[in-house]
Length: 435
Image (tube, rainbow, N blue to C red; front, side, top):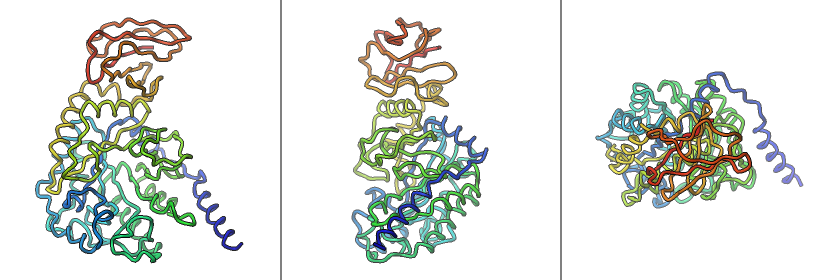
């Protein structure tokens, strides 16, 4: 009976941490609205795991000894890394922000942290602070830098064992030392938010590592989020936990899915789409970290459709690239960025600062809207007509490119039906509806 009562107390405590006590600062609310309008960011999964060229979970999936894995740091020498080249290529693609894995589940830090020697400056022959160089380049180019930070650590003994990291040579019966590990994380976050200028967001991952614990695990998120907002009030907090947003979070993340969908099977049933800014993260090929055999890159056409569908849900697309161990972005990824940038230079106005349109993403495409204008994005080339709900007859219906008037019918019951030209543009024929 005592055990049951203790479990109930822990469960109630975990629920109570979600009580709505967080009051975002004016700077934070402004940053939220800017983020909501960004629509496109680039995710960069990069660490010493790239030297194995087998993805970011190589330690978990293939290496039985974490100490042997750590030796990869001594061979990590990304001599072709040029932060400005990365940032300029990403900015030219139309992205408004970059999210870098500052520390993934393998525990390796990509900056000169004072909390551990297991970092890119002290443990590698490269000896350069990647976060610093990327932050400087982002600030120069006027693009925001977000930092991914893992709550999990497969290397450290003070991290309480979860459902992953059980085959890396750690003591699976150990309960770790949570207070010590929690201080370590908060000290690292303090460094990132003190020494690298303005940071757009902290992107947490790993909550799910303890989702199977017999009693709810207390990540002490409220205190950690408060620390971030104290250090940089405008800095947004997101957490890839696949649950209902917790108090203190500023945007909601959806992994490999559009908001409200669960094709990847990650989302908890109670995790409804919130009113917070939304972000969908998706890979450009199949993996997050660099994998030498994964050449299955999405076509630019597919990426454009993914981007318009995400915007059609009122969300941002965080599109991932896994940089190579030599410090270069893969050639296929750079080509996609170039082609996407050419498209965004023309059509970006139909996505930036828009909200979800009157028709959610469907088989023929998606809709976005802003300032009394609806943009219909038709990405299925064999589409002849599209119909959207509209409460009154529009002032005009025309092609985005060229401005030609289009044939349409309207009534209050059935809405607006637009006939497309005989040869619609590809990969996305945009129609402008002025209400």
